[in-house]
Image: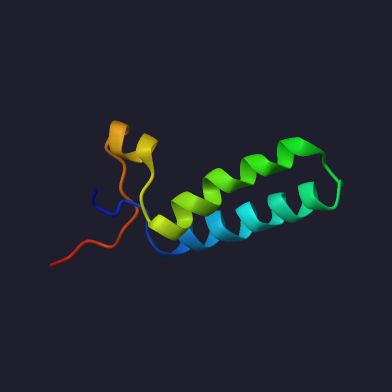
Length: 63
């Protein structure tokens, strides 16, 4: 499992995931907000299954 999610992408995933979970916990957007767990986990792990399937990589290139 190689990391395929880079800096800004990871930060956005974590922030959006936390925001969705917080909105769901406060009943602002309903239970669908708990879908924010997916971007949160992929942001924390630095690995995204669809990125792996389609060959995307937002990590900085190592020289």
